[in-house]
Image (cartoon, rainbow, N blue to C red; front, side, top):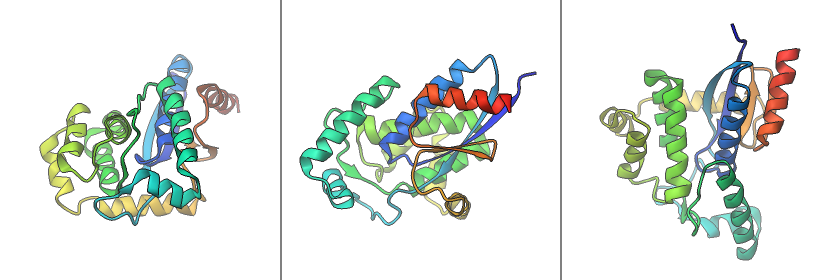
Length: 217
């Protein structure tokens, strides 16, 4: 029987490096498939918890938040876009247009794990990232979010009911606070077996090495 490695992936669907981290994690798990089983839990983190409905122009937001020029933002986005393509996320060539609040996305991810299972949650995570960065459409538009649910193979009627209610709001807030209390201030962050923290969108090689060290300990 293979040993199991539990991984809490603390991330946000509004984080481009989280898409990169997701892709690198999948590569690492595939490389280690013969040596371990993996249990992946996607945990909530909000980069912009106070973002109102309608969002904010992406370039405007990034220049204000990080003190960058428009040219610097475009250079950084091109770099991230190239890195994301290497792991299977083909970001929209024009970039995301706006920055959106992602609390409802985290509620859906919680629902997917609770009622449909962890593989379903992973599938939905991928499709929400695709919606935000590859399709670059509004995350405030219910139809766009439900389309992601459908592509993930999940029940759109149930998802719509969740979105139109307050279901799982407190659970998501509790999870967010838990990981903030652990000191997570940036994403993606990977917590292995509730003990070992890996920060940032590390390469699959780095992740594989961490998994091997954990198995040898």
